[in-house]
Every structure is written in structure tokens, then in C-alpha cells.
Image (tube, rainbow, N blue to C red; front, side, top):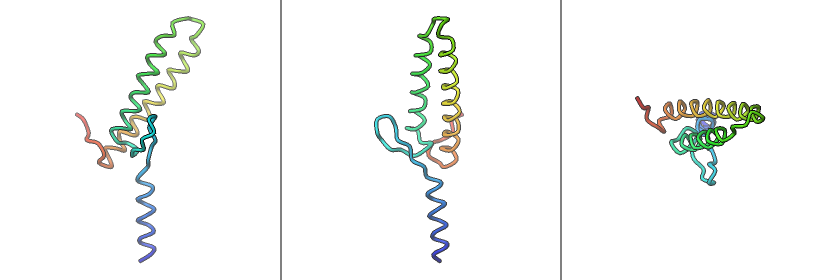
Length: 92
């Protein structure tokens, strides 16, 4: 009986991941708050990248673009996880 409870506890602790937002609030991975935070970061970086117009800063623009791509990947994975765990509803 103890082994069964221990297995259930381990499964539950792996399934539920928590994320700390920029305002210090702790939310579940894949929740709508978490997705919103990632989208906000993407928008801020994109806005900053668009302000860099100088050709001398093209490498920096490229680096920021790669960071945006990485955040989009993280956001998509978090969204899939949120849908799978029932934290968010899939949009059509």
C-alpha cells in the first residue's frame, strides 16, 4: 500500500510544475497566466528588436530574434501541456 501511495505522489509531483511570474506570483506551468506572461515577454522583446534599426546592431537583432523564437517554442509547449492537463481550453 505504501508503494502505491509513493508512486502516486511522485506522478503528481512530476505532473504539477510551478512557475514564478515576473510579478512574483507562483502559477502552474501551462496555465493561462503562464501563457500570458510568455506572450508579454515576446511582445516586449519584439518591440525592443524593432527599435534597433542601425546596421551596426544587426547581430544583436539576430540574437533577440532567436530569443523570441525560443520563447515561442516554450509558449507552444506550455500551451500544449495546459490543454493536456485541463488548465486551459483549446481554442479553435
